[in-house]
Length: 108
Image (cartoon, rainbow, N blue to C red; front, side, top):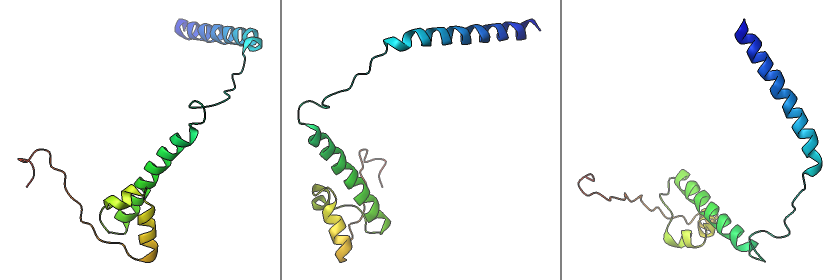
């Protein structure tokens, strides 16, 4: 019984202190609004890098789902756009998956 009363008292005290602290500090909170992100005018570079890498991943997943193997280097160099064009025109070429073997004794 003492444990339940101790827990209830601790809970009531924490709730009381939480409300006191938040009402007194609410007037001191200031919002910081950034005027520019990633420096001056360099936002496009960050978005281009993330968009290109995401497009390569989606193109590789699409080619794998169509059972056409892995992306060719030109398809990856164009951020997957060449793969989308080849898939739309029916010119996809089968490229078998290559196993990457760093330890020759384990690969056979």
